[in-house]
Structures are given as C-alpha cells and as structure tokens.
Image (tube, rainbow, N blue to C red; front, side, top):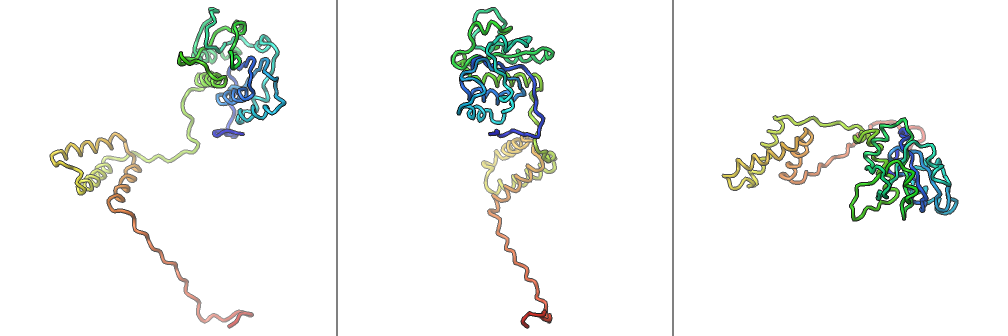
Amino acid sequence: MVGAGTDRTKTIIAGGPTVVLVRPQLAVNIGMCARAMANFGLDDLRLVNPKAGWPRVDEYKEVAYSAAAGAAHILDSARVFDRLETAIADLHFVYAATARERGQAKPVITPSAGMAQAVAAMAEKRGVMFGPERTGLDNDEVAFADAILTFPTNPAYASLNLAQAVLLVGYEWFKSSHGDAPPPPAVARAVSPPADREMLIAFFGFLEEKLDAAGFFRPLGKKPGMRRNLRNIFHRMQMTEQDVRTLWGAVVRLVEGPRAEVQTRKRVRPRKANRLPEPGESG
C-alpha cells in the first residue's frame, strides 16, 4: 500500500544518519520506522536482534510492509546484526535516543541540535540508536553512544512510540540539511493581481448603497464610523481583483435573489424541399 503524497516520478532523497533499532519487538513498528525514514530521506536501517528475526517469514511480514506504506526499499535493504558492536562498527559518532540521562556523564542534546551537528559533520558517518518499545536502551547499550538525544516532551508523559522517535529525528535532520520551506505547489495557479483603489472604492460604494437601502446604518449618527469600520475590514484582507468580483457577485445575488432560469429553444433545421428520392427510397 502506497500512502497519499507518494510521487514515484520524483527523485528519492537519501543519506543522513543511520537508524539502528536495537531489539525491536513488533514487525509493525519496524515498518512504521521505515516509513518515517522515507519521509525524511533516511535510507540506512539496521536491526539488532529483532524479535522473531528479519525478514519475517510469518503473517507479520505483510503487516510490516503495509505499515511501511511504500517504503519497501528500506525494509528490503535493512541489515540484521547479532551484536550492537557489529552494527555500529563503521560509524564515527553514535547518538542514543533515550528519555533518561542514565548518569553516564555524556552530553545530553535535543534532536534539533544533534542533527544540526550531523549535517555539519557530513564527512563522518553518524547513527542514532533506538531501544526496544517496552524498555528502551539499557545502560550497557547507552554506553556505546557519544551523546544522548532527548526529546523535549511533557515531563509527565515522556514516552514516545518507536516510529514517532525515528520520525522526529528524521524531521530534524531533513530540516537542518534541506531547510524547512514548504514544498512548491504541484500545479502552478494563476494569481489574481491586487485590487486597485478605484476598484475597491467602487465596490464600497455599491455595498454601502445596498446596506443603506436595507437599513443597516442605524442610528444615522453612527453611519460615518460604521462605514469606516466596514471599509477597514476589507482593507485588512488585501483583496485581489478576483476577491472583489466574487464579493460583488455575492452581494448582487443576496439583493436580487436567485438568478432567473434562462430558457433556451432548440434550433429547428429547415427541411430541404423538392429533393428527389434516392434509388430505393419511397417517394
């Protein structure tokens, strides 16, 4: 299953820090982590002692791939290791994602700071370790890390789903490496030019005339202030020409009521007279 927003015609962004899932328990979470990685251009997934092994050969294989929502290439290329030391052997710098400092005198930083460091050190291979869903990383696993990543969360409820944690790290890496400007629209749309003063003043005159006829400006002593307030509302909108035309048309319909149905007559083509019958036709 491919999720909404997936566009196979676009170039896939890849790279970024390695994601190391240590003793992951649920196949669905591995699939969701792959999806989170694909969202933000991470492509190196490593699994250390996944429960029930990997790749799965039972009914949960389909569950994992469904949860990946089109990020099958990350699941297919995931590497499996028996020992954490082997999984991180080629990395130059490792972060441990955990909500607790563990008293190991390591730097404790946020994902935004950590991923900014990772982007600045692109020549190095960096990775982020995530622990199992129920317990997180243990102290011996944290000891392999150079720094601890801790997410700013509600102190009364700091527990994150495994895929949520991967997604937040991926987002911070993507923002640091590619910026956080919104993507351009898929289809360029013509933009109506701003309405000039002449057009606005004409609209105000029309609108105020109709409101005056309907008894809107009461009491009369407050009419000047009410007109100014009304005009300022529209000025704050910075209306375009299309905005003015749309509002003008809406007021016309409110004042005049429903548009009358236009009856159209079918064109009747004149018959050709004095045509001789073709052979085989009845005269």
